[in-house]
Image (cartoon, rainbow, N blue to C red):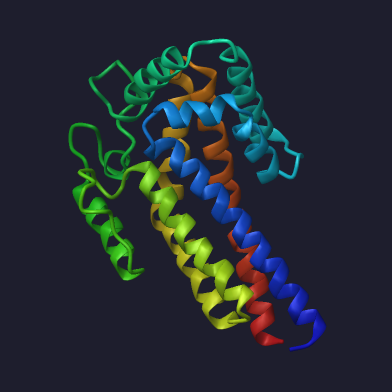
Amino acid sequence: MNREETISHQEMADLARLRSQTYGFLGSLYIQRPDPAFVGRLTDGAMISLLNSMTCGEASGEIASGLELVKRYLTRIREMPAQEIETELAVERTRLLRGIKPGYGPPPAYESVYAGSDEQPLMQTSVAVARAYAEAGVGLPEEVRDQPDFIGFELDFLRHLTDKEARAWACGDRGEAFKLLEKERAFLDEHAAGWIPRFCDLMFQDAKLDFYRGVARLTKAFVTDEVRRLVDLQNWARAARAA
């Protein structure tokens, strides 16, 4: 392997690793219920440090807007009791993600709902998502009583794929890395990118807390950027194959 290939593989590994960390971070904000540990991360400065590291300290557009909203919320809660923070986040999370009743928040955050409707979810969509997980050798833990097409699980699946991609690049396995890029693109095109931005628009409109308004902006912007990014990466991969 020559020096140019080594540098290229390392750069691709670093990019895939950063993308994986971002998917994992965003997914965790939807999956994890606000608890003392979650609140602790918000109030000890770790959240801001993580956000800044994911954007290398530079951001624009909806990413910048989302970061500013989250930071504004973190500034507001600095002197609040932890229990109050936990309660207000838990109430807001349930209202925004679970579709408790019409008019109380957006339709619940499941792809099957946005492929169909709140009254008639398109359940074959949920089956297709579960099949994609199984084909990649992953699935929901047995103790999880939820549908596989929940927004947090789809983001976490993309974390899994991009993490595997990073490992493939790091090992110099270009063929495996190319296959994983194809799987990422397919899952975004067939599933995540088709509904998550639309849900995030509704979540942003309905959210009362700047924290979740910011999370909605960040999620939409990142998923939308990923679609464009993967087109570029696959074009690069095709050129690399032909070289």
